[in-house]
Amino acid sequence: MEDLYKILGVEKTATQDQLKKAYRKLAMQYHPDRNPGDKNAEEMFKKINEAYSILSDEEKRKQYDLYGNEQYNARQYQYQNDSQANYSYYYQDNPFEQWFRENQNRDWSEQYEQNTRNYRRATKGAGFSAIISGIAMVAVGLVFFGYSWILFPIGPILCIAAIASGIADIAGGVVTLKKVVGSKKRKS
Image (cartoon, rainbow, N blue to C red; front, side):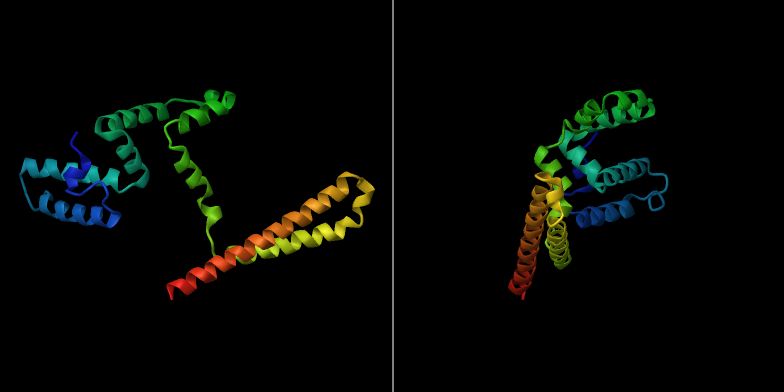
């Protein structure tokens, strides 16, 4: 199998827009309706479609970039055969083994980034939400602190922890709002 990037005539660092532009140009050039009876053009058209179908899908492109031509095709074949088998017994008995096999080829930093991406977005909404939840947590801790002595020593400890957590949420919300407002001022 040829290099998919060479088929489309783009670099490995090409953006999705560059891929789409190259695909459209080549698809128009080699389309069977524009080249009736030309087997080479028909074959090239199939290669262009296959290359674009893999490179336009982010997950498939990552796999292709990670494993290359031959290994990507071998992994896809293996995945298709494995997906047809029934693994309910395997999944029920050993979830750790399942998790390990699915994640063994992933870069740990990439996996961490993917799992925490949504928690680190600095927006006004996230800042206000953190402040409001912090105020609510402090209020609940203070209200129940008077009754916490019934469950001594655990009750007061839980109330103090709730108050401290609320204060930390408020501080985090203020910091987030400062970042958002500061970044907007720098852009202006």
